[in-house]
Image (spheres, one colour):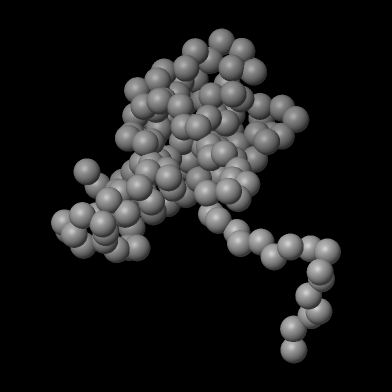
Length: 146
């Protein structure tokens, strides 16, 4: 059973182009960036960007060891010794926890897999394929490997 129709409310048809749409995340071109880590704020800001980055980073510890991998988690504490990033190394499935205070350098070494990718771009490409008849328009995601 449906609810009563209200004469004082005209029936509206919703169009997707007229709906409110929240803006997407703007991805900075960080690939290859070597942030200067001169202060605690510099380090925290760089690691926050590294957490949002969808590529590998290389962390150099204060003892000179280098680890390359994907930062998948971070714990933000009151001090550098109570703040950590968790990294999935490029060459293993081991998860490594690194204290902010142990980091001396950071480099955004891997390709950002989210760069240039947006929902709008995907929809546009989908409809171009579908209407042109060239190729197969599918809702399956494209490979991230280019």
